[in-house]
Length: 446
Image 1 (tube, helix red, strand yellow):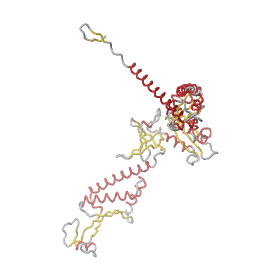
Image 2 (tube, helix red, strand yellow; image 1 turned 90 degrees about the vertical axis):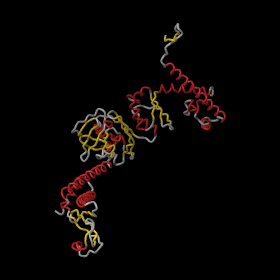
Image 3 (spheres, helix red, strand yellow; image 1 turned 90 degrees about the horizontal axis):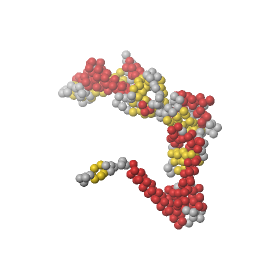
Image 4 (cartoon, helix red, strand yellow; image 1 turned 180 degrees about the vertical axis):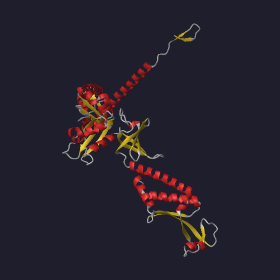
């Protein structure tokens, strides 16, 4: 009987995953509350769990006095010496209280406090457990499907897969098994809310980690991933070991590893791309299988103009622009794909524009154009020293004149575009009804 409470504490702590000391503290609080309910709020009480006997002990402390004025806080010397023969006046005497005498109401209060504290502790334990598991994949069973999302039973807790985190065309019913990525864990009054996702790029990354042992071992690294959930995805990988092909490791023997991921994602197509430290090469890899003719980099705006043969244009762009869109997300660069004929046409137009600035100075024009300055705007934004360094033998005054001329041409073009826009706006306005003057001098609609 002595160890029954101790066994109960150990069992609840083990089964519910609640800290043992927290349970003991909760029980002490409950007994303290019940005792004060029974004996009064002014009670000087000390409650502690006795590990040796496995029971909660409660002691009421009273001051030893000659004459008792307040029985709740004082005890006479005569009564005190019956309990402790060695006590003296003004001592504080601890009197053990039988915790069984609190009565039904006090016991009920204690029970309610224990239940509530246990619920709070269990919620806190669940929150801490799943908060530490953010970014992991979990397995669960679908409990309910409604407009708020899919309610998933994870065993100790329930989680929500909201509509925005669900893959289009995926259908789940109660009782189905489901795998998802822990996106977030929030503290709510009713308990922790665990938010799941099947659309996040990290879900794809974590799936590859479970299928490709070289990734958790640190040999192969996933650099980035981009997805259009349910349709297509791209993942960039690199290898620390030159003897191990990162793409081959992720594909697996006869495609077994990547197929396991594709199967989990219900047929989502996955392009596995080798990462490269050179952004241009990385972008070219990301746009595969399209063949790339030329890449023009705008480092300042982190943008690239990618030129492809005309017959490769649709392949590089992809259906509804999907390939270039995923490649842009994967690499972190803005990508503008152009066919060679379109690029050459724009080059000719740019060359003609620069001729407006440089006139007959074909040698200077060619050097500037071949150095990558292909527009009047680029030339107008250059510094004098930059231009001098670009063209050997160009004098400072001549360089300044060229830049000033470029600014004038650019300004004229901008004004012309503004005027054209105004004219188009006027043409698009609804036609006003014509008016004629009537015989009595008043204007009426024609």
